[in-house]
Image (cartoon, rainbow, N blue to C red; front, side, top):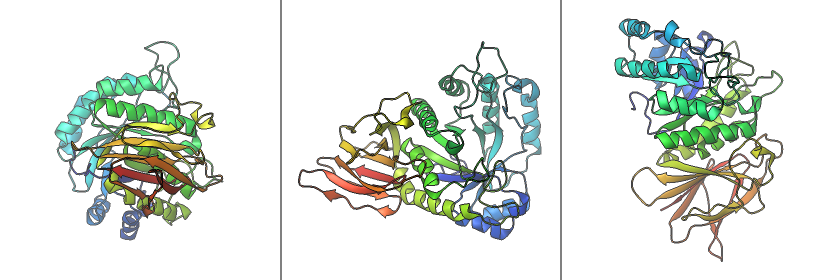
Length: 409
């Protein structure tokens, strides 16, 4: 269901554009930063008019009754507080605008509310013909239930995160799964496990995976680096992410946003613009393929695997690609991909995962085999030269936190 958001391309969004950052220049700067859409917009017609002018979409809040799981105390209470009748009233009052791509249906609900959310999302998709219903889920560091199935003072409402995602897929019929994970406020190893669970659920149920990442910081003395932005984006793409949202562009939560509280650009603006440009370099070719598996290559004994319920391998062999690894054993997260149409075209998306915290970035060599194939490569910096060695293998250099897409036709 494309509606106004073109789902054939990789879309990039942000959370929050506060009223102090809604002049025409602010909206132009937003577009120049590589942003396709804004989440948590209120219905502000002058700004929506500017969005339409600059081809920016809005996921608008305040149209339908809000719901947020919060600390879990309200788990299981959504149906009583937000019956379908309230959504019918909202539909009657709604005034459409071409810049409204989606209607915000809520944030981080408990699994105990998924049955009602399934009804709400179906109703919204039927009665907002030009928009889809947007819903974002908890990350895996939200609290789980400890006692029994009817306990409500927990966030996920299930004993495990995997069960939380399974319940979502059971009750909510969206064609995407969206969740947030703030790696540099949580952990790298937790991020990998969260990606694994959601990406595999998306594959299993035929949905696309959307993710919300951090451009701001939960500690005022820290600024997310360019390489940390890069690593979040490209590790997510190695798991097949088709929609990337950055939090937060203006004030929403935490510190060191892309714009300060006066609407002025911070150092995060140029960083984010650069990383979004790099995503775009890869995105068109990347979106011709879909992810079927993700592999952790070179992670044997790595601290980054502590929470991940998947065994690492020393080199990747897919039947098309063989002996894929970093020459000196650097860690790689590799997404195995197939062409979306029925052809014999295949791809790998490789994220350089040796330095996720940006402590000692470097450049290194990756090697692989792909016999009897027309092989090409592109990196986040552009077209990538492949060296054909005497033994028939290919080699190329990549950088820590970088992304490389290899296609074999």
